[in-house]
Length: 268
Image (cartoon, rainbow, N blue to C red; front, side, top):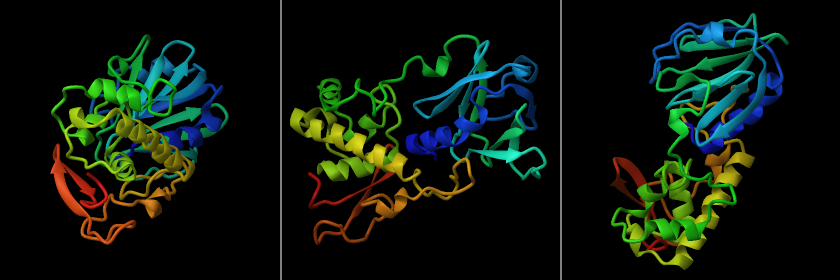
């Protein structure tokens, strides 16, 4: 699934082509996504200008003159900037055509993404926690919210109501760097260790954005290329292999129906 760095990478890739550009046409070939594409969205956006493009959690927000489009890439979605004469591929579902000749094409084999329209705040954004790379987030905030919680720390930091965008890959990597077991009860971690975790969450996400996201089976960025952060992963996807900092072997457990790889010697 594209996580926060992949979405941020996509944002940086598409923004120069669509910001301050007038929409010529929106073509919806397949509107049955995770949530149905807003009915009549084609006529609503036609002729409007894209004022700004931003990201909130894993959502891309295209702010128009009147209202905005909210795009989620789901588990396998991607956005590519193509020319108008580019042949449509299987699983290309939506195309945003701009007056400048650029076309933003949405590809989603599993159709778990979404394209929604709203005149006000999108309901999906109403209850989200702070952005992990913002000044509103740090380890002290995690420590305060974790008090008396019995749930494991990994699903705790992956909860979008606590902090947005810390998906499975980056949660695993940040916990490893912090020396914290993913199954340790969230309410039994010291403030000092949470401060370390908060710093490493920021560092891991910033590094992934810098390197263009993580290479996954389905994810490609706006240029159709994969990211490169996977080359530096210490634990994710490495179950049974040797730890990069000790002589231990990485172990894989299930937390919240997700694989969680960690080092039993380095993480406690």
